[in-house]
Length: 132
Image (cartoon, rainbow, N blue to C red):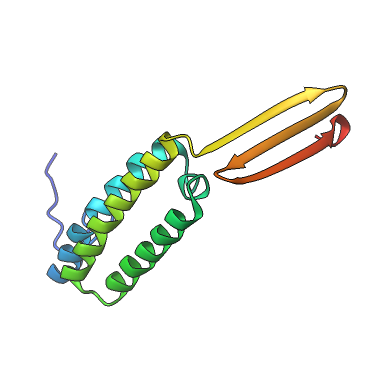
């Protein structure tokens, strides 16, 4: 069987149509790989919810700055922001590993109780078994 050469960009294996797109795609790989790693370990969107609010806010700002660099097709800035995002993923992981977040569930006398602690913030919930 003879292989067919494809002259146009294949969007599945080669996302870039131009050299500029290829450069941008390469620039953001550090952030992309970090996201794949840490979301694979913690779950999608979970890390941002279980770290100190100040760290989550810094991470959100960094993500927004990366998005802006991508939209502006600024390859150099996107690379810098992608490296910052990769460091941000590491910081989120370290904060979560440090045990900042904890939760406890108990079932007593037909009631399910939960206590969630997020640093100095605490919240308690109680549900009747029929409502669970």
